[in-house]
Length: 321
Image: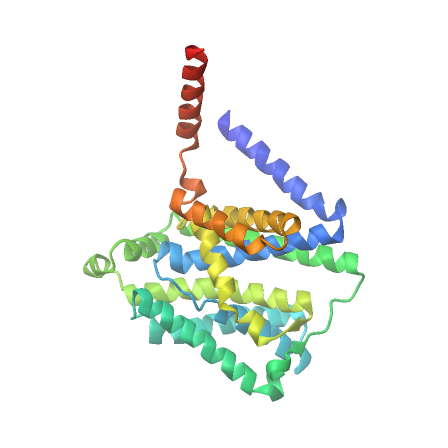
């Protein structure tokens, strides 16, 4: 009976998401598209950070690589978006393999600093290579043909499809041999080595998978906004937000990054609309509270126990009266 209820709720949720672009304003459609994008990026980062335990603060290098791949191929080589989109994923994976061979022997803060340095180095190359990338002036991408209404719906469903794809992928990863190898590395890398797990190989695989989805998201972002610049697509603050989403939702879980992205973005928009001048302060306070009070994420809270404790306290108060 419980499984049937879950299935029914899931189907109703999918139906609501499917009809949303046809029932709300274009502004709200773009807001939901942005939330989907953050959820994808957080889920991708969760593969290397949550499952493998490596804080890849330079993960936006793949987002930028995907965005610039689409921009250059579409403007310079006049390649259609579909082909450029696939190329963005491939180039991001190749970049992850190269960087992984160089950096994934580092651990802890050294790896975090190394990935950040790699991202800044790639950003500098993009700025210098102005004949191809547009340098600090950025680069414009041909817009999607059609009306703004069509464009909003197109990117909404594109991001939604990409989000569903990574959720399904991570759900399989969570219970298969590859995922268990990632978790073993996170738990104790030395012990995993002794057990015969090639930790360097699996770390490179984890980072490549993370890079693949991050690069594809960057590709869609570039086509969606029709203009990119290096300081935006290689911004480390994005990765900071991703880490907060993962921690709030539940690091190393399937739906934790998605829940964290929806919750954090919803709260951010609500606070921004009501308290524009105090936006960052209030949001920062909420994040600190969440990290201190629920360090394992909202999806790891035993809600039945919480409800039981609250109900018991209410019952005692009623009895005292």
